[in-house]
Amino acid sequence: MSQVALVTGAARGIGAATVRGLAAAGWNVLAVDRCADDPALPYSLGTREELDRVAAEAAAAAAGAPGAAVAPGSAGSGRGAAAGRRGTAGGPGTAGGPGTAGGPGPAAGGPGAVVVREADVRDPAALARAVAAAERQWGGLDAAIAAAGVIAGGVPLWEMPEDQQRAVLDIDLGGVLALARAAVPALLRRPPPRSGRFLAVASAAATRGLPMLAAYCAAKAGVAGLIRALAVELRDSGVTANAVSPGSTDTPMLAESARLYSLPGRDSFASQQPLGRLVSPDEVAAALVWLAGPGSSGMTGAVVPVDCGLAL
Image (cartoon, rainbow, N blue to C red; front, top):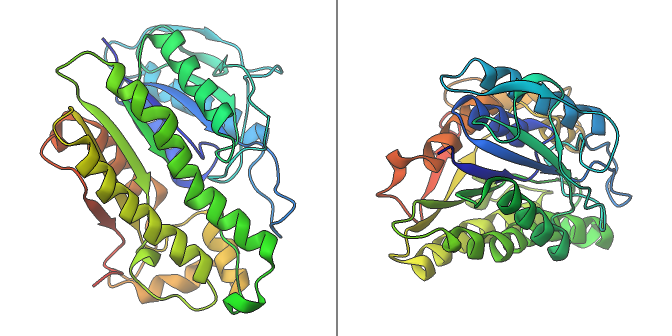
């Protein structure tokens, strides 16, 4: 039986790459994103078209996976055929119903199926509905991956607009907390012996003092602390909690970071990493897909660097 994952921040960046990676590995995936800009943030987030494209790409990748069931899907309009924001939260109350990925691909009941849903990670009720939708669609939940994130700053903390600070903390940390509260009970509803996974995207910023990004650093440090505490709380339940800690990753979020630092572009961050290049979203996703699988069964409470050596 194919395993089931829910991924937030699924429209762009690491979240999108994780949806594609899981589907290619035969997972059924509920891809969740906000699909709307945030008025507190000075840059564009993802779009509905982007989430639809991610779902279609994931379905195509899964169609080539061994054992994938292939059937026409429908992306169209309607409350579930979302596209999304760059690893974002979703707007409050935009809890669209599920829709299948567009184009030929796995049927919603077969391995590697991708269903999209609009939900804001700051809205606990919307996340609870998303979890319930995954359980209804596929009979349970085996992994929840918190990849939604935004960035803001560019000025000292005391000069940062309060609405920007609130958005960073509420999405980057509060969204992970909200997903844990909604998804962990579902992971525990699987009968023993379980192999549930709660995974989050932290950051090298969790352990580095990055100037002009104090709120972002605080949020990501909170994610790392949350994962360690969850691991202890879950103990021998059969559900583990782990995170990845990306370095400078080639995503739209990094482009916004470059703008905040008045740098020419995202490639300006490559030289600070010992490997001399940016991390790709697919590299981070590969770690998350592995952590979601059986190979990580002996790990819990870990924060795994995928950072081209930035933390050294």
